[in-house]
Image 1 (cartoon, rainbow, N blue to C red):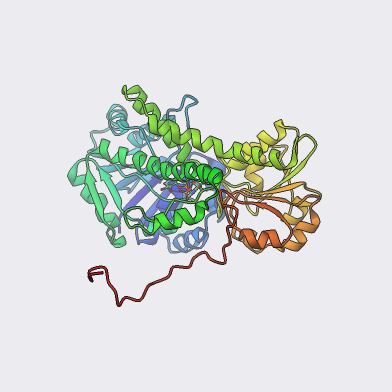
Image 2 (cartoon, rainbow, N blue to C red):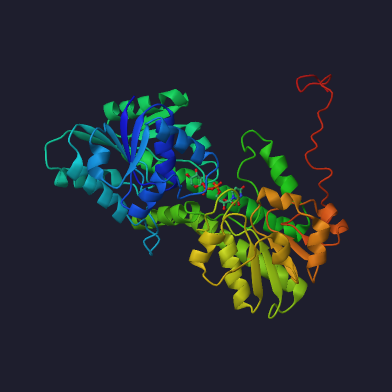
Length: 454
Ligand code: UDX
């Protein structure tokens, strides 16, 4: 058992703390937000994350997990302190490091024993050196410390699972300290890569930028498919079966949102530009992503004409399913664009209503999908929540005043939607798309193998 302090109780901090506690360590999660800590102590989580609540309760009652606003308390016994605070956009595309700096200073002021400071926040290359400098400046005693970078790759909606079953753990910093951190992850049995601190920091940005690039790539292919009448869903499936390509992050749709991809791609662009390297591919990735939101408005205009006075219903507001997060969510941009065009927009989301209201106080949120679409000229599926797959399509269509249905995530079978009476449009599904054929891979009789002469 190791003693660990985790600074920050949002997605990364809370999930990391809970995962380490579940692996048998003693963890104190520290946050300067008193309200958040009071709610956590009362068993209320600040984020909606499948499975997390149960493990929090289990770890708290086993005495392995506690919450505090006090660095003094958090660092009393800690051998490792993980910094997992926010690094939001600073307004110029760069990362705002004020929370990281403040956390590093507080750690310095409260450490009493040799400690490994592990940075989990996504930070610009070189931040490890900044943290080292701050701790050196502010530590009151000559306590030994090392700084290690350990970027986090968890996704919202599957945070705990991702944390407990990572594809890899990346550690950057002095070898001995990095190896000690590696031991913490040993129970997970996954590959660990140890490198220098700047390289570890870059691995995080490069990974997120690559995934964002895949999404913009398939969205660009979708835009071409749309003009040439090919089905992008089948194109992605055909591509994904090539083992060099793989099937992941090839869903065409309304583009990426969330707290990471847009912010991290922008921050990487900023770092590149500052270093004298023009980030031409990354610029295209962002431009294509912005186009996806406009695509909805253009398609609605094609079908409904002038949007002034039209009622449009959005299904889904969260930036993706299984989360209540609306940061950089396509839905919010689409609502703004539609309102600018004079439309009235209603929406429904199973979890993200409260968060959406914080960002957009006058959002018209309805309690269920059927109420949201009542009297609507068109419906747009923005977030592919599972419950939207099981809608009563007949009831939905009867509640609407029009028949236009734009499926921004290619959830439905076009043939089925058309026979349910919708004027259905998916993302580049081609004129004849029919999902009764999809998923069919025909395995030929192996009597003739590749090595056999033809
Ligand atoms: C991402 C990274 O996956 C994770 O490793 C990192 O730590 C944080 O950023 P997250 O933002 O939680 O995680 O969501 P993710 O599931 O990766 O999806 C990001 C966005 O891309 C969502 O808006 C999603 O709708 C979109 N997306 C994803 C697509 O449009 N198409 C896809 O094929 C996949």
